[in-house]
Image 1: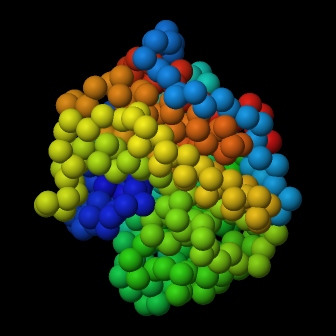
Image 2: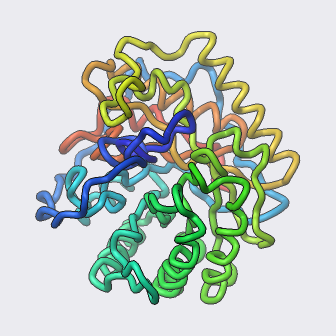
Length: 380
């Protein structure tokens, strides 16, 4: 996401990172040294379900079975938002610690999505070498998550210059993926997947997106010929991007979308947005208009899957964790959106774990949140 950790498809250009206080897009402060990691959190049992966690009547169905492209068992998924996609880990909240992944797995999650700002940790000029210490740290995070029994969706996040001067950065983008792909080539394809570009936006759009992604994918295929690779469309990969999405010629692709609708609910008091674009507190979720809009999005996604035979998954959705938004409303939102997409066979990944749009606060999951989040009745 971009702006506190998310990636809304509506006017996201004002965000500063995907969903949280500084991780979704927009201007970023210069890199600073990351603070020491926070103390290892203490695992706690998931809270008892609360009666406020509802799903507006949507019933999860079996996962859509694609006839084209790859299929990946995402299941119940959470984004590690505002961690490694910050300018430096620790700039936007606490650092990841190893115990996080045992906690996440114990809460019933199957997959983490790991946003990474590779572009801040590589040479600006050829050969665009990624800092070895940073690369080793990301590898440690991936291996620790896998060791806890989680799948990992590893992406390239917040390469901001790609939204303003994509042609000038196309070679560097491809060479970053050459290094990432080689470094993770020995990871199992059944549980580690690559996502080429988080939320293409701005000057990176349908007019050039395919030409930018294709060489990067070729670099991936040189060392990972069959690993599933995830691709999202223009305009922050919103639902509407499916209408014009062009994909490289490759048999192992999966399509992703992001949704933060209704934006005036999910981004209430999102102070990282541009002045004049911050929705005020007081918007409630779950009325007839909200459900009609959600059903329209479901129809669009279902139509795309039926037309193309491809798997689609929701890589980000979520609602701001401002204290002025009642927790019951956030629980209702996460439950409704995840259940709605699961009802058409689509799996989803909630934004985000502990630093932004929080599902977990300190040593405990927010009451009712884990239970509200649903996935499909089958993984594949």
